[in-house]
Length: 359
Ligand code: NAD
Image (cartoon, rainbow, N blue to C red; front, top):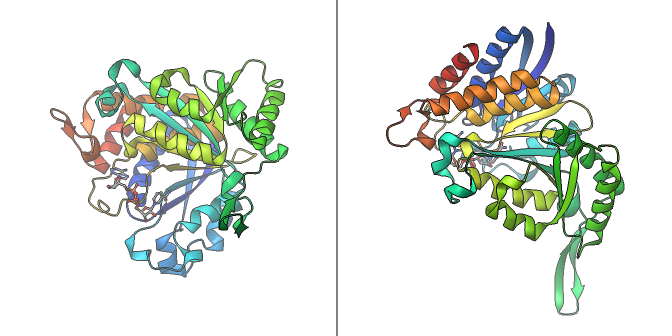
């Protein structure tokens, strides 16, 4: 029997509701495949400000560091909108990423056949569903580079700098190749190497790393073309690796193609196996506490944790298949409801998915 320690940072708003369902599903996986998952609940975000006066108490970070993985719900909400900058609930996320050394963001864009109607693209473009993984660099590039104001030729000007070291590119490229090896072994590295020096170093480093992964087919694409290809022919992509800013933009574009914010998981990884897994959505204060939130993004985040942190591919697939089955059977939370489907709440959706696993 394998045993795993999971820190649960449920957070605010719908965070505790959706992570509660993900825990329920993981317990079923434990039962079926004979694993033991130990959950330790810790606080971050608004609820931690209320209880400890800090968005990220030291104890939370310590528990997360000692765990095999971290499951996060969402943080923030109007109650804490006036908290001063450094202690805002969302700062807890940055603190966790930094404290846990997480520099890779994995954002899958998966479209379920049963929800094809929610996709804004023509049906023939996405026929058969979509399954893209965007691997975004998370702690470098222009969002963290040298910035400021100075006197320029036309008066005051502002500047931000994109800089990447070879080490930074190597470590994100390594994670991307590893992810490609667990999928269809097709990696597209996105850059702007026709204009940017930092992109030329990026491209060269990815090419060098490709020698260690001969099974992975690597190609390069300029970011402007990648943005176009994502809506023209998204099925050509398996794994995309790119810088912080390009990844920020492309991952939002890709998630729109799939139609619903309540369905998409994400992961942040570092150099080891510890990762932080969370839905891409926020704390949705407008529907919190009403049993209306879609727990599928949180449940699929748990599946990513099984796959990428614990290397439990079969178990991850069991969750993904259960989600597909339940959607095909017509179960819908309000955000994805359409005529003729079966309306359910957060708890019921979690239950039908958990039951589908045990079948
Ligand atoms: P949001 O993602 O919370 O909500 C946007 C819209 O999507 C809302 O109408 C909401 O009801 C809906 N929605 C989101 N998740 C859903 C789900 N699982 N099921 C059904 N509907 C869902 O974004 P927002 O409104 O911009 O932000 C709300 C709060 O969340 C803010 O305080 C923001 O800072 C915070 N936030 C946190 C994270 C995070 O913790 N990772 C990410 C984004 C926003």
